[in-house]
Length: 223
Image (cartoon, rainbow, N blue to C red; front, side):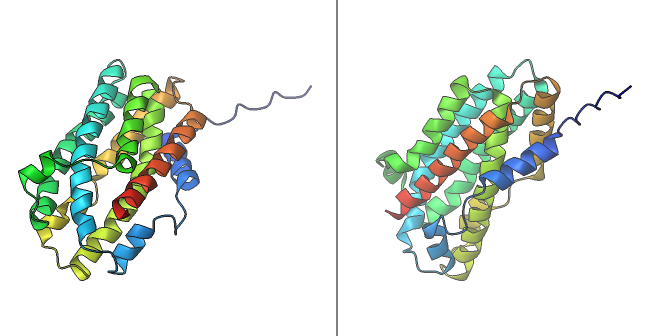
């Protein structure tokens, strides 16, 4: 008598997140602005544009993460992840002040700035996900995007010191995110897998668009 086939091993959060980061990683040459910054060839003015656009992005993303945390109220590991992201956005806004000051931007410059549509596509899509996507799937998509964002930020931070002479305070915004974000992401995704909420295929669809809008942000800053 044939033995029944063993059940397939259940995926782990670490494996799901690693696969998302690998599958959704942008091409090495996909971000020409970061390459120009790395070489010291981008005009210094791009940093002022970056800071002005990020004021808008951070404020919007914080609201999206807060809404996702509320939607995941019955799933504590997921809610904790988005709570942490919302807190991180508040910290990021404070750290952005160093770059704003180094670029000699005034409060009037910030409040009177007219955002570029291409730069604001990312937070607009993040808000759409906050309204209707499964929070665990958003966590997977965001983790893949954060990996790409972190790589860009590390490159920009080094170039700011080596080629543009920015002070330390101006570079704080680009510092590596805390490891607690990765830990909370794994906990959130594992909870989603254990409860049957996580759908990696949907998460990859979200992640591909987030990565595309991420690149649109950088390209629009360059414009």
